[in-house]
Image 1 (cartoon, rainbow, N blue to C red):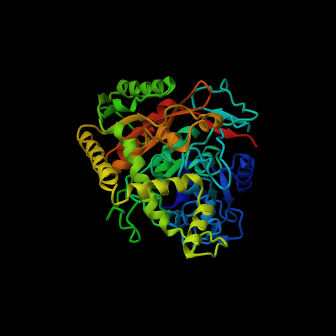
Image 2 (tube, one colour):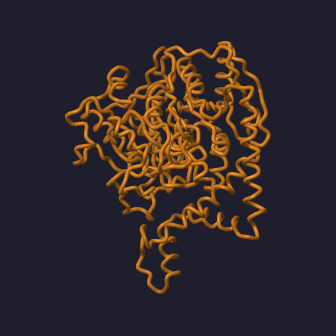
Image 3 (cartoon, one colour):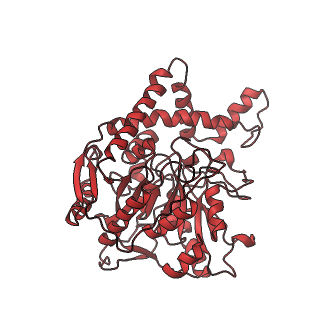
Length: 491
């Protein structure tokens, strides 16, 4: 699929000069860890080819010849010798990589504040001047002013990608989603964030965090653009044995989708403690909207949802401990000057290469995997994960999609966010998103309205395995009904 076709007939593209000005304009937000589009690489330039479009890539996807640090000192000097499959597919289709986007170190976080490049700030009420434009609604009364000594978080860990898309500096961006790392920042930044079915997009070249849950994900400003990128990247890959075999289906959405007769489930367990009334009202408004349009909307139960975050908090560190054993500083990665012994060298490399969050997960994972603890923690967590997956499998026998919140509130100020430790924040931020990764099903975050603080509020749609077309059709219908504003940055 040629991206230039979509660009030519559906999307007006700013000039090369305007695009670079936008990138410079959002520099204070720290969305990009590096800008590549104005590099000397003739194959990655817009000059002389106005039909090319630009995409941003989270800096945990390998890109040939470019630094792939995962925002960590451990890989600060690492340049990848190859490109991730999804990155290569985009480039083969005519896309240009404008830059690499910031993230929490190794994707461990929900705020994009734990990065060696510094935190990424949300563009909404950041202090940068912008206009809000709706197709039918007037948004001129909403607050756009920022704070002098505080700012709203972008979400994480794909916060850089979300801000890059929300600011209009790129057509779309690649993120990764292990427990909500693409949908969370998409919700906070007011963009569409898709986590496809596990195995639909190749993980080859995505530096692993949790192999059984990691999913390359797509962030765009609307649903149609998301579909364009999905169709380019979806499909089998001989380099990744977990990709689905012989998948040739292309997602096609009607211009005017209908939800009449669609069966929509509302899981009652997602209405959890700490959820703001504004999120509940937005969730209810969309459910009523679907019912009024002829959808069959019913409350359902997914009883094991309440155990999902505890299960995730065990399985995630276990896989992290296994995956991160490779970072010893011998073959690649940070190598310190410690020379007393091999053990001391390993300890020095890892203590200086990883931040406290990463070291904490490695420690926890190794504890859970001890012979004396294995059956008590890891095995039980795997059994609960199977129960969660079975629940979704059963519910989709009777329902087409599920409708839930994405986050418990609009984007918090960084001063509020930092009052809780990392583990507590992850439990809060991932509550509505991580069960999807446990089950391997697709989900999409769609912005629907603005909060009283003039920040985005989003809802999440969840569907059965490989039912992206059905799910995105409903997402497009919601998008058309709510008329969420387009943020236009002033140069």
